[in-house]
Length: 171
Image (tube, rainbow, N blue to C red; front, side, top):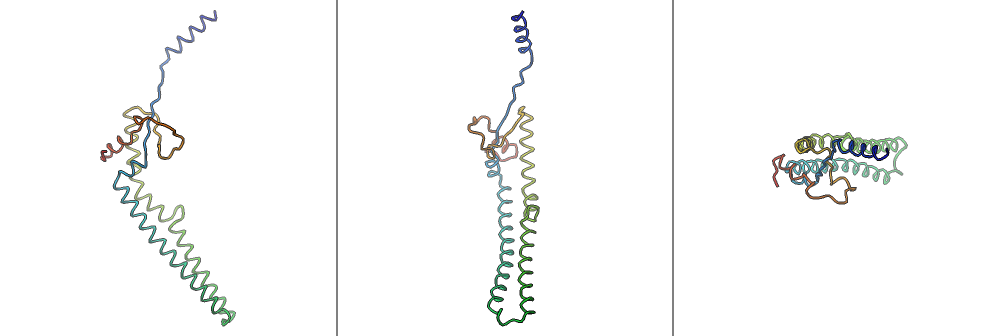
């Protein structure tokens, strides 16, 4: 009886379709390095960031200059003048801080600019990966550049060049 049940279970198991899952890897760093529009967008972001950082540093420098002047002249100032100078210093420091937040906060101008410049490129890559995955039957596509958990992967599993070719950047 036990043998009959065991044979029945093995037969039933063999009849069920085996669902072999296919997966692939992409290297987003490699893909992005081979897209000229991404490099141009990154350069534009770097230039904008440097320009904005210089503006913030200029305001901080002005605040420091006001403070140094205040320290040098504090003995000659009346109470009202001291208070006015201190308020000016605080106002300049707040102005620098507000400008820094405006430009570099998580939802600031730099973030918005990055989204507008790099977002469309990332969407194109995503759509290309999705199309290749659907075409070749991949259930899972991992980014080997961001996952340090991948110790070894066969080069045949890497579809980065296929993605570049789909985007028109053949390698």
